[in-house]
Amino acid sequence: MLQVDEDQSWVARALCANEEPDALFVQGAGQRQVRLRCMQCEVRLECLADALQSEANFGVWGGLTERERRAMLRHYADVDDWGEWLSTSDDPLAQEIRSPKVPRVLAHVRG
Image 1 (cartoon, rainbow, N blue to C red):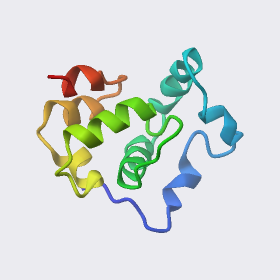
Image 2 (cartoon, rainbow, N blue to C red):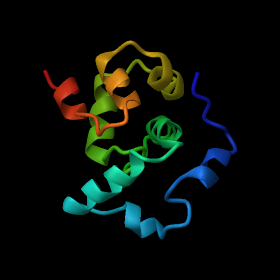
Image 3 (cartoon, one colour):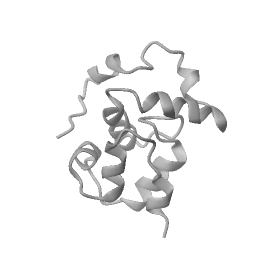
Image 4 (cartoon, rainbow, N blue to C red):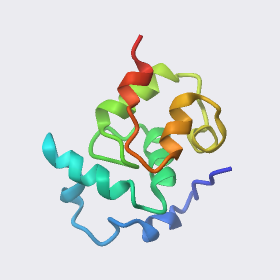
């Protein structure tokens, strides 16, 4: 099971740990570049779980935009432990998020 450390020690291992924070809070086409970098990060799932758990409103976290995260929070309103859901759920979106490609979140949550 994915553990999101309360002390957030995983943050130090993030590819973006030494970047200017503003580089992660971009709009439009800039988000694509950030997302691609996230997909190569060893702590991508921890980052995403933390952002979903804390309902982070801005920026790219764990490879997902704020729009995608908001859609997930609405669609999966019953999830109370995002770390567990991301690491163990058989839901097709969780499985896609665990794969090394940018997930199609909005395609999964519409309908």
